[in-house]
Length: 329
Image 1 (tube, rainbow, N blue to C red):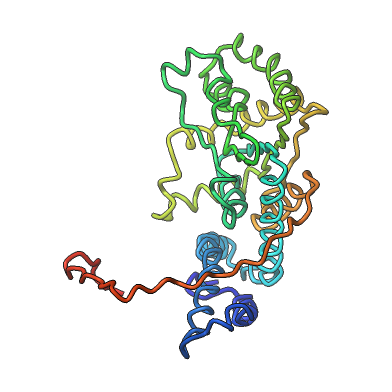
Image 2 (image 1 turned 135 degrees about the vertical axis):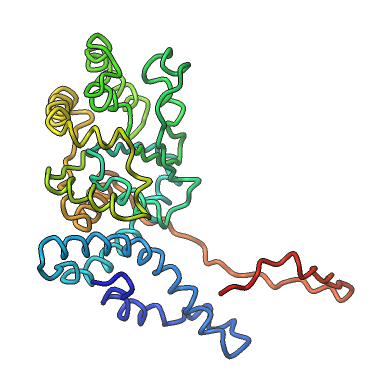
């Protein structure tokens, strides 16, 4: 499917969005008000569509490689509807977390190009960044390497009423650091001795800890890496470390198996997301995440927009033309 074409679901969703809420209808003061409200609602829908265009590039590469028709359109209507429904539930969960002052930590682990970032984007897309934030730590500095291993992660843990999504986490030591030789055997074993107690301590402190591993096949990672190589908009995602991780697929597999075996504890179990199909992975992960925290919808008072104060003595000063950004579009 060409990335220039909108998904088939857009017409149906657009039709639903076109219905102006009654509360807004009452405030209409000019004939194009409906059109402006409609455009604003469509813009919200287009946020997801913009990200889907990236997936279309992948579909085109698959079509070229397999010389067969894309299956991407088959479930798009359902995907969009269900994604928007789940995102609505995420907003309710967010309100509940704030109301109950809950502390939530979600770890996203998996191989390079497994789709962790895509799921995180869909989770955070409609949420308040002051409530739900992403922690994606760079390689440790020289100072951080001399600290207690978990120290740099602790500063990113949530306060009451916050959700923190770790895009990779302290499990770097069990994966990339082990395979690439960034830690020695003693440090590696100490990690496995410490991490169960560390996570139990977090849970005893009131943190809700959820751990996801995104699983893809050897062939799927190869395809996604080739996609990034040939897509100038995604080449930045590839680093020398990514290339090396591709070469060392089997070593990463062994490290993953050891990690899951030694850190899958009753208090903080691992949950495996089958991620070869990106859309299914997103929906399954969000659905499971919602099931892990019992929540209810918080009743809100109806919002009433106050009348704007008009001062007859106020004169608006003209803005110099050169201050405006050129109207190219």
